[in-house]
Image (cartoon, protein in one colour):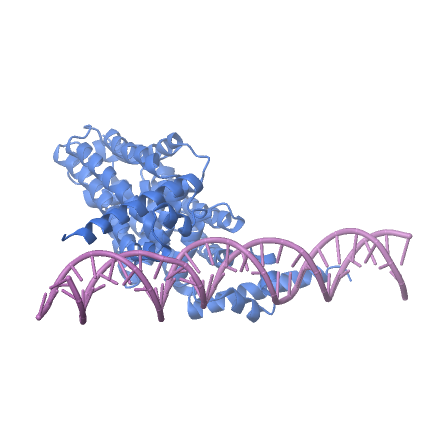
Length: 208
Length: 208
DNA sequence: CTTAAAAAATGAACTCGTTCAATCTTTTTC
DNA sequence: GAAAAAGATTGAACGAGTTCATTTTTTAAG
């Protein structure tokens, strides 16, 4: 019977990821013990380590799924954005932010970010960084789309502008995750306050 | 002899920090064992933990010293900046970047950033976040200064602009630390490529 | 079907950060 | 200056992530 192994492997990979995510959500990342994750997934600790390099990798795998979903939702907005820079940006970014806490707690985000910074050379951290790059590219594409439609002045460097917007929204999200008490609405309001005046600048300017 | 204790305490605090920094630089953060740091500082492991809450706190203490120095050097630039937005920004940011790798390796930075994200509620992480805020305020002050001197158009929101510039340079520094092979010059060039067109925008624009 | 080779699973042992009850040192009190 | 109180030091023990030699299961070969 060819493929028995492949099937079992896929099944175990999924079981481990599901068990881990459940326990991370229930008890937080640090409190969820590898031993418990292994038990819940019905594998031994050693086997778990055959499937994931370390505890952090499991979390980052969850985050990667989450970001993938956000990217898909974002693509729809970029395809047909509000024809106003500030509003288009706001719409896309709120999409990102609103989705962010659906599967993952702030603590899980913090841990995942910390891992991707601290061990950037593990395969899954690279995946995370890659997805971040795709998000950035998506913001750039939004600016480019708005430029094509005449909403953004032709002289604007869409790539530079998009990257800077993205790095800002990303950094602000990090700060948001660091403060448990901060509500999503405050994050959105702050980022909007930063972006709106700049958006206005490229919405209607003429270079002299 | 009043103050014997205080003197001994200060001495030990310093010895632990020096030993730790030496070992972090020599062998990397993870490989430097608490036991070795304690031995080098001529205290017991238990004593070390009376002085610092955990291993990460020792590193963050080093980073705090480093950022404090950068802030001082930055203040001199802000007091008398080049009278051109792109150049002023470039000067300040290169000051930040050039200083960054003098005491700390990329690996140490990554670890420090990861800690400050993951455990934002420890006193020293709060200190780190606070210093970050001061750096941000310094960039805002640069834009304000340029605005006062007529280099930046009066209609520009200096706070929003400065914050966005800072978050961008900060995020780019994170990415820089994640890629061991990237030289400082590449980081500078990339950030400059992002900032220059935006700087040009606020340097000479008229709102229509 | 048997057997050899390859792949996967296992869990006890190891490492290293962290804790804490017991001990020692300094300061204060009288 | 002796005794008591407060403060500081210590290192063995603990806990949790990770490793790896051994065992078990699956696949391939004859």
